[in-house]
Amino acid sequence: MDCSRCATWGQDMLRSWPSSPAGRWSLASTRASSSESLVTAAASREHHDLTAPIKRPSFKACLPTMFRCGSLSPERRRLLVLAAIISCMLAVAWSRRVRQASRSPAKWGSGRLALGISSVMAAAFRWLGITARNDILEKAPHVLALEGRQVLACWHPHGLYTVAPLVFDSTHPRNKNSPIYSFATAVASVVFQVPIFRELLLLFDCRAADSKVIDGLLHSGRSVFVCPGGIHEQLETDPEQEQIFFPPQLGFVRQAIKHGVPLVPTYNIGENQLYDVPQWSRAASRCLPK
Image (cartoon, rainbow, N blue to C red; front, side, top):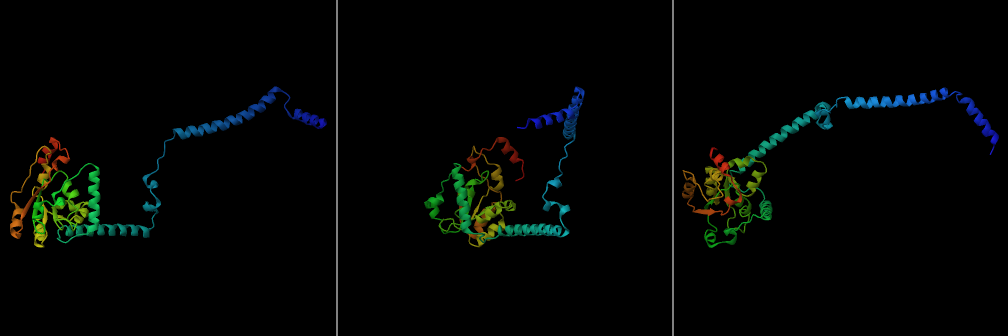
């Protein structure tokens, strides 16, 4: 190790270092002030960011670029408008076709698809604890006596949501091995305005409950299920008692006499007890137009 070089380096350092303590402190204070200025500047920026109002992005800025009208070219705008118009036209045309099918005696859709959907629905309700025993499945003697004949069957009660006919009896009209194969069920025409649900009803051979529609079904040789009580019986559902209602004009009886088909009464025992209907709900339903 060269001690002479170390001594020379120490002397040079002493010459460059300030001789007075004030000078040394001034150098240190200069460095400290520069550091403090940087910290103060950063703190001022942080303080400004915290106190400044938060600028929220606009709804337009949150949209993807393809949905911003301002960023679309005129050609793309015209394509979007054309696609919207075509979609509306297709929806209207499909709704008209569904309404026409609800008034036609012809079958609609795939029978296998109807059987599959109805089987899944029945399994789901059984999983929930709602089961059913059906004389049609067991082929009771009074059912076998009517097998192969055209009839006008009246089912009661309507119930609050018509679970038994929709879930447990919807498999039979499209099942060729069922005694009620090809039976049509008359339901309120208003349900054919509900998308998806109306297609399911058509698959299950449901048709609009209209006198002309029922007349056309009977004229074509098909048997029909009707609920004479209708919406009035639905609104009067009472789990504490069994009751049925009939329209004053008895149009379904006239239809049976006109086409010479027997009237077959049916009753779904336990339909009214599936749901609890409060007293205030029944009182409010009486105020609704029937």
